[in-house]
Picture 1 (tube, rainbow, N blue to C red):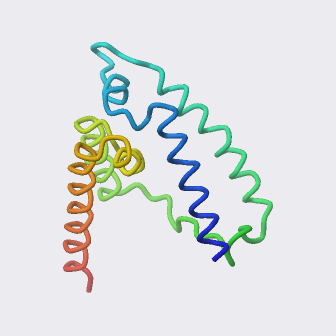
Picture 2: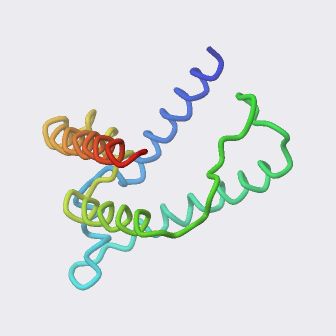
Length: 140
């Protein structure tokens, strides 16, 4: 129960940060990505502002034996850059540029503009489902 409460609080804080910073506004995101047009650099400050607490979190994590709300850390087991990672990053970037949303802001936008965000979230879930189907067929 404690883990669920912490996850809910973290999600609410993250969603509020996305909404307040403008990261959930597709027009603002597309303006940031339009570097050869009417470029809007304000999201650089949001991203830079997120890096400091994350850097501090990594420093604190290194000093802890276990997380405060779980039995162990669940960290990535690899840092390998392979074709699947690159392809996923390209697909993510294209989707972010076209829709002006990525998964976190997409969920936040369901509360702000449900019809437009709903199309994005459904497409995202279909893509995730297709990926799961395709990768499960390849598994030995």
